[in-house]
Length: 489
Image (cartoon, rainbow, N blue to C red; front, side):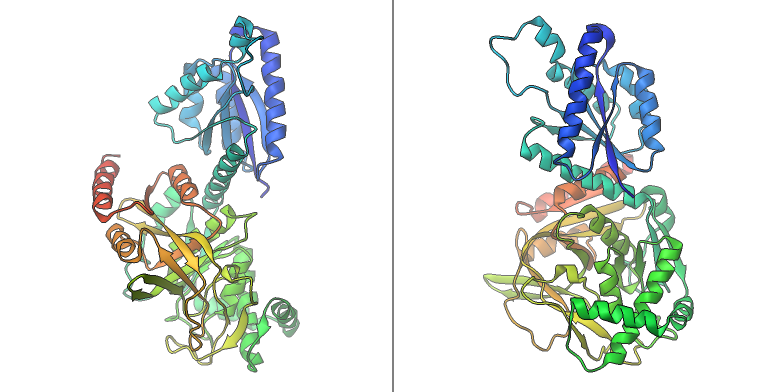
C-alpha cells in the first residue's frame, strides 16, 4: 500500500474570498514543500469553512485505505463548533499542526489586514479546544513549518500512523498453538481484533508439511543462491540449509496466499518436520514478516508493525528475548538472543552473518537446524512488549543502549545482542517486572519511544515508558493510577 496523509486547513467565510484564495494557495504550497522532506506525501485536500465540508472530508478519509492520517492547521480563525461532527466520526490518526505561514512578525507591514489573514495563533487555540473537549486522540506538533526539527517530528508521527494502518489489516498465521503452560503468550484474540484489527488464526503443522512437500528442488536452488549472496556458509551440512529453504518457501507461500504479515510457531509442535525453522524464520523476518517464538502471536504482530514503522531506516526491528544478565558491578548488561530466530537486520555491519548448523537440545528436532549467527549492532534502541492485562492491553517500552558484546562467546551458536538497560540494569529489570513485561520483545533501532506512545494513543491502549529517569516507586504510582483510569474508561 502506498500511503499518504491529508492536509485539512481551517478557515471561515468571514474574511472574504480574497483571503480564502490566499489561504488555499499557501496551504497547497506548504503541502508540496513539506512532501519533499516527509517520509510520505502530504496532500492538500480542502480549506474547510463549514461543518458539512469537514464532515465530508472525514468520511472520505475514513474510507480511503491509502489515507493513513489527517493533519490539520488553522491559518485563520476557524470556529470550533464546525469541527464537532467531523472529529466525532474521525477514524484515522489525527495530528494538529500548530504552525504559521510567516516566520516572523513583519514590523513595517503589519496592519489589521495582516492580522486578519494570519490568525494561526488564534485559530489553532480554538481548534485545540474542541479536540480537548471531545477527548479526541491527537498528536500536537508546534513549530515553524520549514524547520528541520518539525519535519522530523511530523515524519516520526507519520510512521506511527502507518503502523496503525498496518495494524488494522494485520493477519497472523499460527503454526500450531502456544508453548504449553506459558502465561504471557496467551491473550484474548477477539479483543485484539476489535481493538487492534489483528486477525489471529491457526493452521495445523500438517498443513505446513504438506506445503513443504510440494516445494520443488528448483525453488530451493534459487533460494540457496540468495542465501549465498547474503550470508557466509559456515557448515558442510548443506542438506540442513536446503531443508530450511524448503520450510521458508512453504511458509511464505502460505502466508502470502492468506494475506498474513506475521507468523508464530513452537518447538513443541513440529509434527512431520525435521527441524524447527531457524534460518527460514530469520530470512522471512529480513523481508518484513513478523515472527513470534513459542506461539507468541502478540510479539509476532508487533514485529511486523514496527518493521513497517521503521521503513526508510536501517530495517532493524526484530523479535528478541532477554536470556541472561552480566551482573558484574559497574559492567551490567543484558544478553538478548533466541534459540534460532533473530532477524539479520540487527547484525553489526562489520561482518556478514554466518549460516551454521548445531544441535538444538530442546523441542522435537530430528536433525540439527541451520541458523544465522552474528553479533548485533551498537546504538540507541528500545525494547517493546505488548501484554494482555485482562480487559485491556498494555504496551511497555524501555530505552536501551546496545553495545558490542564485551566477550566473544565462541561456543554460543546463536545470534546475540548485548545492551545496557535504562535507567540501569537492576532498576530497569525491577521496573519491567513490575509492569508485567514479557520475556519476548521487539527490539528496534529505528522506532522511538515517542512513536510507540503515539501508536498506543492511536490504538487506544495503555502505554508505559521506562527510561533514564524512571524509578520503581514512581512507576508503581503510574501503574496504580493507570489501573483506575482504564477501569473508569
